Length: 330
Image (cartoon, rainbow, N blue to C red; front, side, top):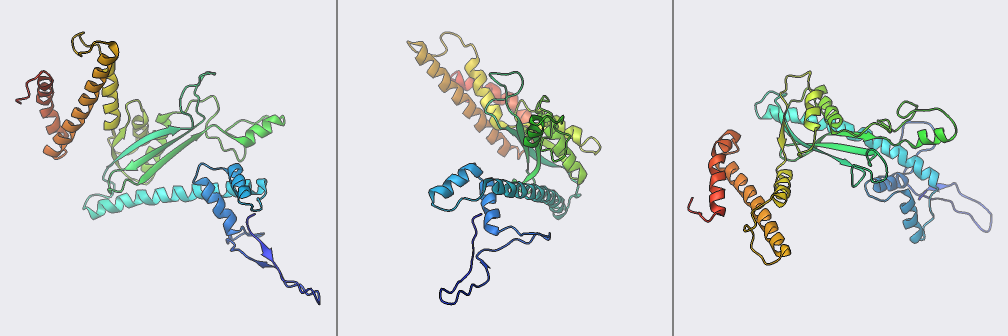
């Protein structure tokens, strides 16, 4: 790897000293050779960046450093990834327990429900494939962020994966194996099963239910079914899980729908269609920003009470329409 051992040899008498390791080893508690800390540290750094082993070897080559063996680097990467996954799950469980501690400090029952926000991300820019049927993505990760402590800690995670290099290698050799199902399989879903935000929410809901942590509101984007999945995952508990819409996605949806809306021919002035379209875009942006400002002001005025906000909203809508019509007296 990246590490060296050295010894001293006398050129006169031929005495050679013992080999001395110029690096620190990591205790594993197992028999056999212990891994060197710099080799493991390299894999931690590569794992936390977009650079893999191939590009990592290229960087070392450009620095005129001896390049570690590719297969050994991959074996170390697999061990580091497994340890990282174990530590991550333990850390998430610790953060969920911390939520109960915060509830106790606030004088609430430790299973008092909290609010989370969650969304999913795929390993593809588009969810649908342009050249084949089905989804274009093969991996998805869903993350849940708590809104209780004020720190916005990640408290839940769900990973869906269709890829398994071992299974593909065994099938090329003629073995009849199915992913997932064989030993050391990394896939969590069959290749023909779609990635689902409902399934991701179900996994996260079960994580909370297993530690008796209550949930109330789940903030998601407009097209997500993850909140329904969380509710299904916590069906054995007394929690009444409800979905709340993410304001950022609502604003973008408002802008897009305003751009698609059919206005009268005299609505936007301009001698050409390009000028009128630009006027329409400016109006859509102004409407989006105005609604955001109104929502923020109402939240402050009503101290976050959604029922008071809802009661004031009809008058606010009428006033907004009148203001765009030229009557700004209200």
